[in-house]
Image 1: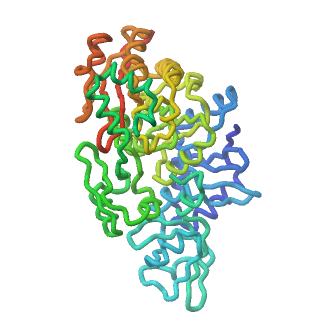
Image 2 (image 1 turned 135 degrees about the horizontal axis):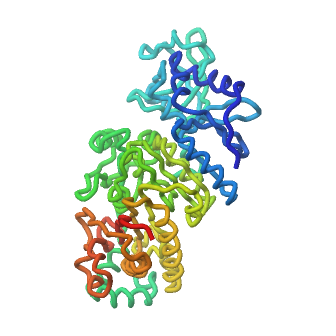
Image 3 (image 1 turned 90 degrees about the horizontal axis):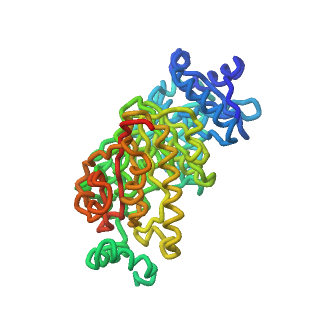
Length: 181
Length: 311
């Protein structure tokens, strides 16, 4: 079990993704209170850990080395690195959703479609959404009308439509038999 | 029909321990199927808001009189297919699952250990009591149970938990003293209703001694990691005194003058002071609680211990 801090290059890769969702400076503010760490396994999971919890982590590492046991979750998981690219994880949704700068709200019928893992097309510009301010091809958080965070999508703006390409959604908790209740 | 499912060895034991009348009631209750119970995630929603939100989808509930939970009266479809479930606004659980975390009542910023965490319902309840602050060490030995534990923690938006896939008996090697410990110990499960406990049909008397040995080992190793003044909640869903009152009696004997049993504020069940065990065992057992299987609730045993001294 190996834990390491992220390299500067890796922090930039994480920031590039997270900054698409948060307001400017928000991620820097988070990094002032938290350390970014990587847990090495089949993938390299990226976690946020409060600076005052560093002693917990050091004990975990020693413990894991003695007993060959596995640390599988360390508080706040942001995502993971795969083939040197950072991918956001569904585990980060509840942490990032309240800090989301441009929440994208979809109608009720599209909620079902989205949490079934499908893409969503909004045919008219939804006045509830501030889509003009959202950069094309950027990462967004999708919400229902009653402000429940449903997952992450990539926004692709076309002439008359807005295409939301599903990246990951909360339906994942049911689709995997291992994680269903 | 119930007698066919449960071996006569167990039925005879219960008659010896609890009497014929109580055993008849236990057997009747074990055959019942209980309605689904859901508990709101208080970090995200209140019980009334949750009730309103789900009733708009056609569900019907009544609020439990004993615990802050909703009891399902009508389910038009499986409740896990609702956005409310998927966004972690509630968890599905037994009524008795609420008791250990609420009795333990760790303060925010505390360091807590949950020694048998999966599937994570009690871990998430602990995190809610702690207002998602502090640190919970969640131990789970079985690798196949880890995905469910991780999923429940992330689904419910819990940010204070560290999950370890290892045997909780290794806890002392972690070199971290904790403020509170939750030990919902592995047990024979004889208090669980048959509808959700098919293993009861296969239970043997030897399972009791095997499980009580594991419980003893877990209690002893966990106790060393508890700070002075810290509390440990021990619970099982078993009707066997070897996994309940006798287990605690023996623990107190092995750790003389180190523990005090704290009174529990639970409105249901039989306090230890009203069972005949109090005449035969340590008088401190008056502060334990035994719940017999009844309408809507499984059999359960719980005690809360405070560490007053180190060996």
